[in-house]
Length: 543
Image 1 (cartoon, rainbow, N blue to C red):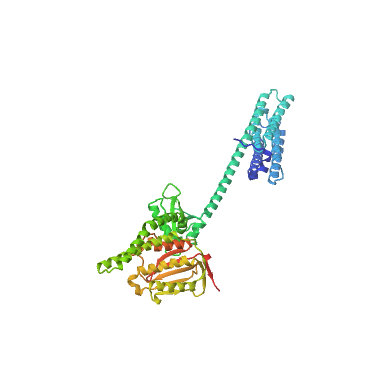
Image 2: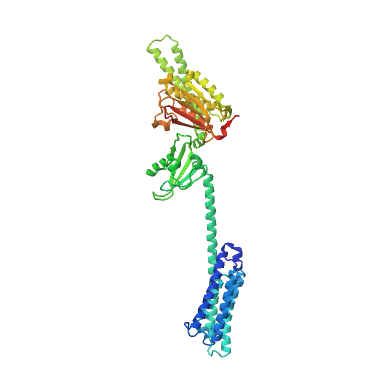
């Protein structure tokens, strides 16, 4: 489909093509100047065809000299932007028609072949004129050569007529005009389409950049050398706000993500990788995808906050846990209560030796199973956090006193190290207290062999680097084996025959619900540290 556009308005209505129109008319004017120079040079040196100016040499060179002057004037006007484009085209066509018709007259008429030069001028001019203007230009050229033929025959300068040849020239001028206009319109339509597509691509690129930057999912693109090609704001935040720039190595800003990517390169899969952090950064979920067919293509990495993904799945888990809890309540708790009650009655009977030992085993395992039920019920009854401001020092001292009594520890075995200044933290006291109780109980249970030597420290403060409040529970016990560190927050995972495997899982769930990052790291000098990091919005200092 051809999008036609009136030529006179082209430069005005399509300002983007102004330079192209200017270049086109200058090329036309420069062609005319070269043509005039060549004809003059050929005439005066005798190197041109012999028929040039043979009928009237004086008129021939005067016409060429005038043509040269007019061409220089047209070029000067164009370079000074002193004229109108349409006027320049029409003036050039009129001058070319008169000059070439005169040169035909002085060189033997249409048989000289100079009429072809006028066809080239028509083709040039029609590129910048409207359809009507191009036809008028062709009409002027046809009238000029026809007038020359009539004048030559009428004055007796030529005794044979060449009206047929002249008519063919005129017809060719009209054909060239129509064809040039059509080609110009096609070129203009194509240019408009390409320009529009360029704008669409530019807008789409800008839109893609905005979408990628506003995604809550982190997006990182790396090349085959693991150099960063793209890093959106979410990825920068999830990776700990590194001092990274496009072109830096991924290993420089997040070694564990780089190692995970290398593992994926060796064996590409569509599974999601979980990257556990032993520092204060967030646990991550990452999956990878190549952007090309070969192994050297760039790789696109999607990164998510594991705690956020867990929060999104929380509603589904709570629904499943609700059904599970209902089944447990009906199928386990009632019979368990009956077993415990019957065992209590049995223990009141006069039993000795093995029989009493058996009742103790029943009692211990009944209490253990009841604890499993209680933990699962705690998960299902998890309420929405209700944060309020608490004074960290006072709150930690109260908590330390309660835990000493609960676990029958000496005063020096649970120490509280509050910050030097009074800090206020916005938290849900009940739920965070439950988390700390689980962590202390976990230390006591797993270090039961050295309970008399156990030292637990509750510590809180504000991180100087991030400005976020934190709480720590440390002990001097044995390290958690490195092979199971990544599993300690999984449900029902335990390394103790006496444990249920739900304590740390429940602590992690409570922290996620309160937007608190719970992590573990071993202490290099010996011992374990569980670290709770709060967001900046939860931190305040009381003056």
